[in-house]
Length: 256
Image (cartoon, rainbow, N blue to C red; front, side, top):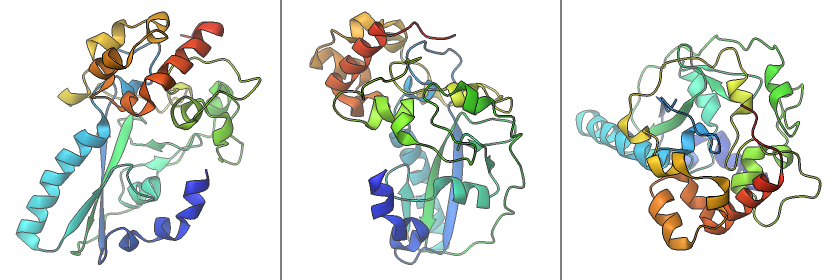
């Protein structure tokens, strides 16, 4: 993706995101739902994790700065940062062949947030965990986006295409197991096991769980906002969700 190359230098140095940064504090939040949606990725059926994590980490950062001084910045998918790299360096988990961070005991159903702090703390021991290299994630990927070298081709990744990609889908696009996002590479991994989340904000939204693709394809802006306004799906906008639903309806049924 072009924006990653444009911000390469910023990604290499957190101090470019928050001047004077000497410590990166990494946190992983479990979003594994008690009930899954047939049509949406697991992380998208509760409250938008960007806001949930920013609020929780903001309270922690304020307390940190009050007690020890310095200044801080919260980063939750909002700045060019090597998130998985820093999470592994902080000892939270390791990066598997599907490109996701695996947290021992919790699997990969986690979202990451960071506090960039100008103070200094003793570093944790980096994670020494390792992927099983079983190849199940590559086999499960509907678009063949995962290469044997661990590289991801975003042009064939369903999460990218159904969320970040604008306009019509590429010609000859593969089958869609979801309307929004894709959990195949995560859920196929033997290491992706752990308890359901105890974060109340991540409780599935009832209206999302009840929607059918046919209803999504006919949603108007008002009802879309009332249902998806507090969720990460809101950034897709109603036109994007309708596009995805229409493509899903024209394709094969989801694999469950």
